[in-house]
Length: 238
Image 1 (cartoon, one colour):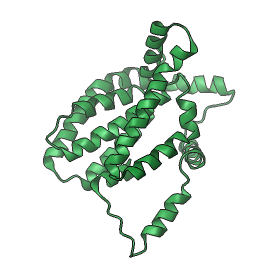
Image 2 (tube, one colour; image 1 turned 45 degrees about the vertical axis):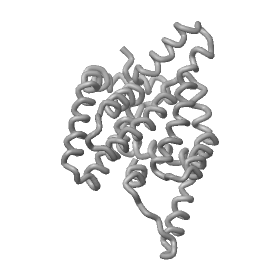
Image 3 (cartoon, helix red, strand yellow; image 1 turned 90 degrees about the vertical axis):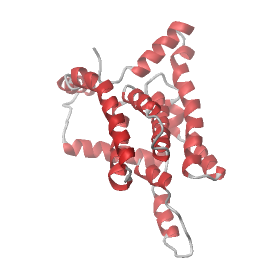
Image 4 (tube, helix red, strand yellow; image 1 turned 60 degrees about the vertical axis):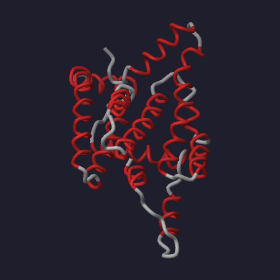
């Protein structure tokens, strides 16, 4: 069983091909639908973080002009679906923070689907959730609900993680070595190099990091006020 890439995107494409036939349209249809919903989800998330519609529209403009977004949403791979589920999971997390007595169903469902669409995004996002909870969450009721949600998510994902994902690590290295034609290096320095490469791509195609420095300089002036609300804290941690 090939488990290095999650199965959700593959099954969505398979179902679409079963419904519409073996065509390019059928293969990319699930990703295209996920792309449309990700636009709507990002607008909704932006309105949660910044109530002004202008900021949400600006976020959508950045999103639509992103080269990776254009490429990912036109392929039949798992990336487009995972992007939509990432946005949906953040929305559910913020909603849970605002209403600690509300149900955790949607947060659990979106998180489980995110895991089965892309492992790295799932784990990276939950690191952000964990750090935010440690530094900012003071409600015992909310902490209990988050722990309950994490337990449900772990029960639904751990069998796959244990039986397949962990068991094929050696096979992944040999597969990459055969594909690349060179020895696959799995070390801290190699991982750090990959991280730097990903950050360079983000800087080039999605969001110039220079704007962060400009934002820090502008907001450092005393005559400019910037209220860091709870939603903005979550946004920055993620």
